[in-house]
Image (cartoon, rainbow over all chains, first blue to last red; front, top):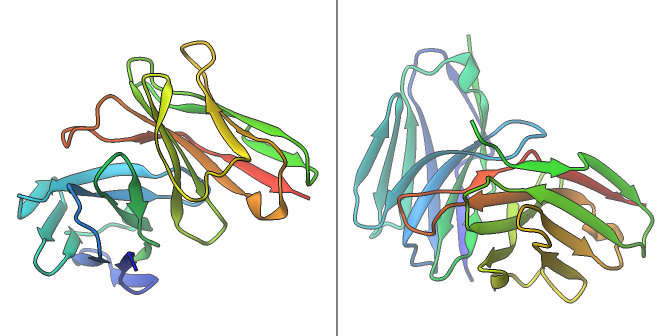
Length: 111
Length: 115
């Protein structure tokens, strides 16, 4: 069956450290993978997109990697801040125009 | 900055009633989506819409659901006869292309409570 799994439901890290979130998928062949941030009671907000032929993408303190052999994407937030505390979702677009989301990882950055 | 808007923010209805959730996508966008998120669960794709027709729909999007773009600006989701399990947050999203250079912009959501 098709699955998108994100690492442990909750991740707590100290301010200033690097947070690393994992997204693993099975039985998909995504054209690309996206990462979103979701705050409680709000809609997801797009952060980064990485295509199947790209290994790494960066945007300010954010970095995403994509390994289609391992079927895994890693999402890094460097120099983390309390304002980075949120739930982070990975989503992939398979063939067609359907998007599939993971369950999300709740990140708490402790001051 | 342009944004997707949704109304109402919260809708309470009785089981079996029809509800219409409304969305105003970003004005120059061409692709429109509805998602739902049951409390504490993942965001689930319902339907995508392009060129005035459904382009993809999930298994969740059964005959009880329909979408419309009645006037070139609004994008609506209708649930014909609501069930208790339809209680969820419903998000509308829009995008200008399906290419890998663009993405979806989500609205703030409508919380639907079915009693």
